[in-house]
Image (cartoon, rainbow, N blue to C red):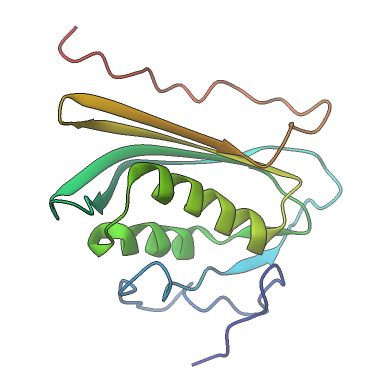
Length: 159
């Protein structure tokens, strides 16, 4: 297996792309692949939506479900989508509070990928009758960047 790259450094050959890859045992064991930004120097926004994200409640061990939306303005690298999918999937057996999981995902991506800007919205389905929405961003968006609404309504039940 190829040695993991340093955080934020683009990989020459992604570790996951084009290969059969097992789901990582934990978020800590997951390796995110970063590749050179093909449009470096151009300001644009990338959005990933994970409408069926799952982690475990740290108290009950029961599954928690969320709709995650990750927006970022790339710098020199972009995250390779298969490695992101595997990273997010690794939370299926990870116990963590909604706040820790959502903010931790955003901070890890920001620290490793070094985008100009990143935000994450975690729209968690109700547990104990209370929906929890968690938002984190790295700072103010760059001037002139078009940042559309994340398009996920607050939970309203059956309306």
